[in-house]
Amino acid sequence: MELPQPFQPRQTPWGMPTVADLLRPGAWVRTNYSGPYRVLRVTEHEPFTGWVGQTKRMLGQFRTWSITCNDFENYPSQRQKDLRWLTDYVAVAGRILHFFPNNDDEVFLLPRRRCWLRDRGQVLGPGSAVQQGVP
Image 1 (cartoon, helix red, strand yellow):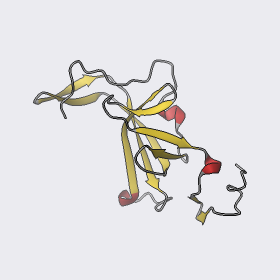
Image 2 (cartoon, helix red, strand yellow):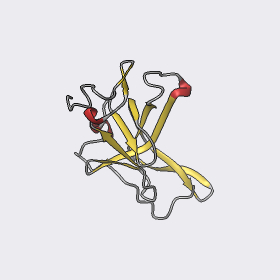
Image 3 (tube, rainbow, N blue to C red):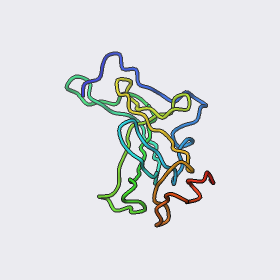
């Protein structure tokens, strides 16, 4: 992918919450294109490199985060084949957005009591504390 000139990525403003501040291991999330997923790890990355023309070069000291997670069917497995990675995200005004401004991917934190998901080996369904609004 060739980057537009000048390169203006999304960045977490100084002093504002980062992706790691907004997401903790164990949280349930979804994206605007798939999910839900259970967060296993949130990892910070820098510097960011990319292609400019035919040359790969460092684009700057931009901090991005990767979210390692697994989906509903595979939780709590941490086998390599069951993991999913959401990469190159930043926090902007409380939202978790992709680093590249031409990419509209977003990660949404799901409230725990609204998740109809398997947790600790049980499927939460009709009549469960979760359905009745107990956090």
